[in-house]
Image: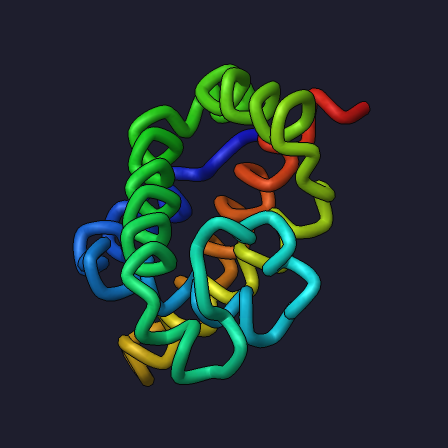
Length: 146
């Protein structure tokens, strides 16, 4: 996948404004709330019986930070995203058995959280580049499945 200079600049601009400690927990919580079947992968996280329980769950927050922190590797390796996530793809495929459709769902939730945080500053042009980036990451994470 080729990223244009404008797309690279847009991705870097978005990433430069993201606070992992805020966006990560909100994004993972949103996935678990909007797509409740994803909760099965986090059975050891404790109470996820309600929106409040998920949103206030420290294990969800901690893992959300890990997940979003892993995106930085992709931002820094736009020319080789697939190889960057090869080990994570293998882990999620072979050990964790995560349905690869969930990577796209997570990307959508990250985009929604980012858009709500940045408001009008998250222009359609920025969203286009960000969506392309997250789609490439989702495909890379799914690469061991196919």
